[in-house]
Length: 170
Image (cartoon, rainbow, N blue to C red; front, side):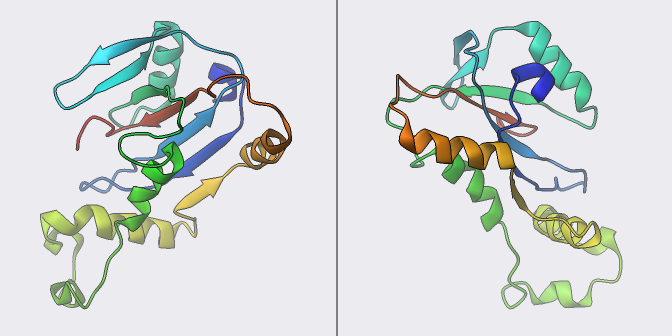
C-alpha cells in the first residue's frame, strides 16, 4: 500500500471466502489526492480509481482472487448506509458463529462436511485461530493520523480507498 498510495495508514478486516481462501478488506487513508471517476453499477453507484497503473500494481500484489478498489467520496462521512467507512468494514466482524444456532457444526469431522452457507463464517474463525491472528487490525500510522486529525482544521473531505476482493458481491 505504501508503494501505491504513499500511506501506511490502514485498517484491515480479515475474512475467508466460502472456499477457505482469504478475503481481506482494507481501508487506506491517503495523503496525496488521486483521480477517480464515477461508476454506475447495477446495485449502486460508486467512485473508482482512474489510474490503471496503480490498480494493476495492487491486483498483481494479490494473486489469490478478485480485487476491487473503490474510492470513498463523502462530505458527511457516511458510506453505503453506514455512519463511516470503518463501520462498513466492521460488518465483516459480525459474521460470527453461534454454535447454539448451528448445532450441526458440533459433529463435523472434515471440512467438506461444513454446510456451504456456513463455510465463510467457519473458515474465517478457523484461519484466525490457526494463524493466531486478529480479525481486525489498525495500523500505527492510522492511529497516529486520527490523533493528529483531531487538532487540525479540516480542509475538505479526506479520501479513503477500500480494497476488497468481494466488494461488488453483496
